[in-house]
Amino acid sequence: MSATGWIRDVLHGPTPGPVPGTVTGTWPKTSHALPLVGMLLILSLDLLTGTQVSVEPALTAVPALAAVVSRRTWYPLLIGALAEVCAFGMAWYHGILGQSVHAATVAAIVLIAGIGHLSATLRIRQERALAEAQLVAEIARRVLLRPVPERVGPVRAAVRYAAAAADAAIGGDLYEVVNTRYGVRAVMGDVRGKGLAAVETAAAVLGAFREAAHQEAALDRVAGWLAVSLDRALHENEHPGVDEEFVTLVLVCVRADGVLEIANCGHPAPVLLRGEDPPRLLAADETVPPLGVLDPVDVRPPLQLVAAEPGDRILLYTDGVIEARDHGGAFYPLTDRLPLLADDGPGDILQRLHDDVVRHVGHKLGDDAAMLLLQFDPVALPAQAAYSAARGVTDAGC
Image 1 (cartoon, helix red, strand yellow):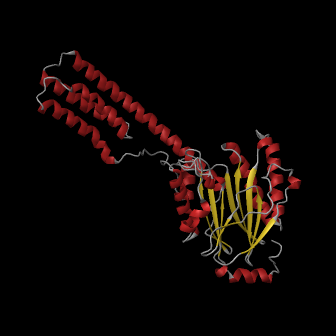
Image 2 (cartoon, rainbow, N blue to C red):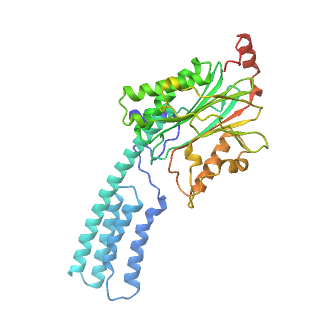
Image 3 (cartoon, rainbow, N blue to C red):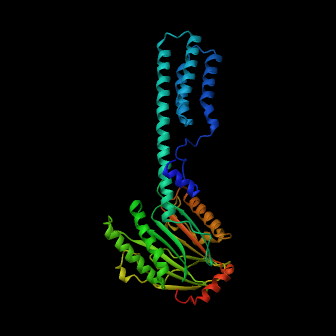
C-alpha cells in the first residue's frame, strides 16, 4: 500500500475523484454493451435491407466507441477482434474479400482498436495521477483548514468551503474556531490572489491565530499579532509580490456571558441572525485596511461589542459569496436570501446557502467561497461555567 493510501485509510474520509489504483469512470456498466449493439445494428443493416453496397466500413467506429465507454484497456482490443470477425463475414457474404474496401476496413479496425487501447491506458494513468493529487490536496486541507467541531464551548458551529481552482480542495480563504480561556474565538479571512502563494499566506495567518487566540486577552491585539506574523512570513520567504499582498479578515469572540466581540480588518461585515428579526450586518463604524496594508504596529482595529441572546447566529463569509454574479451581472443578495434559508441547524443552513449561491450563478463558483456559522447555545454547559468560576476566570477581558 502506498503512503497516500495508508493516510487515506487512517483519515476514513471521502476523497475526491477515483481512488488511486482503481479504474473508474462516469459511464455506467451497461454502456459496455453499446459497441455490441452497434455491431448488431450494422450487421442488421447490411444483411436484412438487401442493399448491394456493403456497410462494412462502418465497423471501424465500433472499437472507437469501446474506447470511449470503457475504462478497461483490453476492451477496445476485444471489440476490435469481434469487429474483424464481422468484417470478414460481411465481405464473404458480398463476395468482396479480395477488394480494396475490405482490406482498408480490416486495417482501419486494427489501427483504431490499437489507438483505443493506448487511449484507455493513458486515460487511466491520468486518472490515477489526478486522484493522487486530489488526495494530497485533501490531506493539506485537513491540516491547514481543520474540520470545525459541531460544538465548541457554548457555540454550535458549521463551515462550508469551496475552492475555485479546478480539482483543488484548498485556496486562499481561511477559517478557524478555537475554544480559549477568553471565549470561543473564530477567524474568517481572504488572501489576495490564488494558487500556492495564497495557500502559503493563509497557512502563516492561521498558524499565528491558533497561537495568539490563546495568548492575547484583547481581540484587537490578536489582529496585531497576525499582522506581525504575516509581515514576517512575506519578507522572510521572499514572497513574490510582497508589496501587493494583503489579507482581509474578521475576528470574533463569543464569551460565555453572551457578549459578542468583533474586530474587522477590511473584511465583509458578519451577519447576525436573531429569531424572526431581519438579518443585521455588524459593520464597524470605522473602516480598517486589510492586514499587509498598514505597518504591523499600527494594526489596532476597533472592537465591536454586541449582546448575544441564546439561539443567535453569526455568519462569517468571504467575498466569493457576496460577489457571485448571475448571468445578468447581479450580485448575490445575501441578506435578502438568508431569511428563506435560516430555519435549521448550522450545517443545513450553510449547505442550502451554498446551493442557493450556485443556483444564482448558474455554474461552478469562479472564486473561493467560505462560510462559517456560529450559533450561541450555552444551555448544555453548566459544568464549564462552574469550572471557570472556580478558577476565577472572568469574561470581561475578552
